[in-house]
Length: 289
Image (cartoon, rainbow, N blue to C red):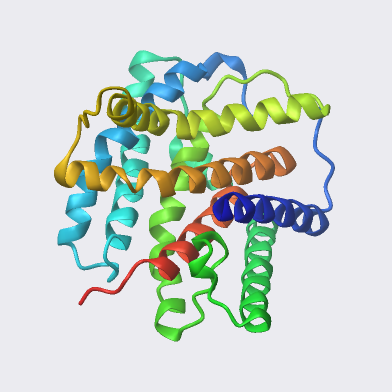
């Protein structure tokens, strides 16, 4: 419940701040490119799912062996998403041209996804959220990490310094993720109506979290129905992290969808998501002993 409240608060505050800072009206159709090189939702779901789930266990174990970033499980989280992003870009560069009509230069697309204004707006939104969280902690004399990592404030100096350490890992991932969700994907025209907006946001969310919900269902459905856990031991333990990762992906998906709808670029959403994930990672994971 606390995580849900925090997620709703983040989404609402961020949307309001983004609207005030950007001061833009969404276009009638927010779509880059044409259908000649687009992917269907099922293909995007398959690619994101295979890479995200397939790399989850090995990269979490690799992260436990690599002492950078210097947080237990924080390194696993960072290296997992970084590797998924690298794999997504590799697939886009070498495989998609052979099995689909996607033809484009990744460097040009990524470079064209940023403008200083949108990146600055996303950074300002994050800084305001950080300041608000810190103010709540001071006024209420509480540590928001007890409530939820989404609203925690890593105000201790050694944790604040870890935010820029985590930032490149997550920024790389969210740029690659944004390419699949908004640059490569075939999407229906999104009109200005509320229903269309909700459908567009829901599709983005489901594409990101759907594969992990399938994995959680495959693990816990037999457990509740038959008393059998398909994955036990270390694998089963690592799988528990998905319960915390899925809410973060819900928030990041809505952020990226909303900023893309406002700007037609993936850069602003990627910057804000990377900052929020770096903030959360720096806040909650323990230092190595």
